[in-house]
Each structure stands twice: as C-alpha cells, then as structure tokens.
Length: 151
Image (spheres, rainbow, N blue to C red):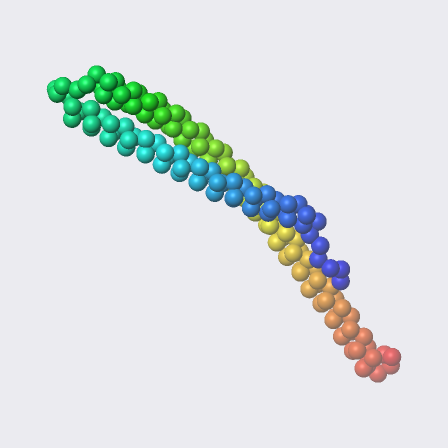
C-alpha cells in the first residue's frame, strides 16, 4: 500500500504559518487599541482636573497670566483628546481589519484540515479494503491447498 500523502500539505503549512502571523498581528492590534484608549482616558482625566481647577477659581480674582495659562492648557488638552480619539478610532479600525484577516485565514486553514481529514479517512478505508482483499486471497489459497485434489 502506498504511503499517505496529502496533496495540499505545503499549502496547509503555509496557511497555518500565515494564521499564526495573523494572530500575532491581532494581538499587536489589541495592544495598540488598548494603549490608544488608555491615552484618551488619561488625557480626559487631565482635562477634568484642569476644568475642576478652573471651576474652583470662578468668581475669584485671578491673575490674567494664570487665567491665560489655564485656558491654553485646556485648549491644548482638548486638541490632544481629539487627536487621541482619532488615533483610538484608527486603532479600532486596524483591530477590526486584523480580526477579519485572522478569521478568513482560520476558515481557510479549517477547510484544508477538513480536506486532509477526508483524504486520510479515504486512505484508511482504501488500506482496510486492500488488506481485506489480501487476507481473503490468502485464505482462499490456503483453503484450496487444503482441499483434496486442489493443489
């Protein structure tokens, strides 16, 4: 009986490797998205602290330079929050794209694994059939040798 050979073994190996790379890309995209969200949260907390500081001085006399500095800080933080939110949105989009790529590769790998399993099952069935035929032939020869006049 010939040895089992899966025709698409190299393709399966390549697809598995690409799937592992896609999983690593997905993990990196998760980390980047999480870092971007953390950056947005941190900037919002800073903005809240500055706003609370401004609220504390409302109605009191404040030096114009201090007021301008706080207003500039607020504007700067507002812009930084907007930029961080845009970066977080991009990171979320990249995460979604990486998840789709990984899912598509997982489907391809599973299809090839299923095909391999089916071919392996056919191979085993064929091997069992060939072995049964061999045993039947051997039994028939022994039976004929044992019969009178059957030599």
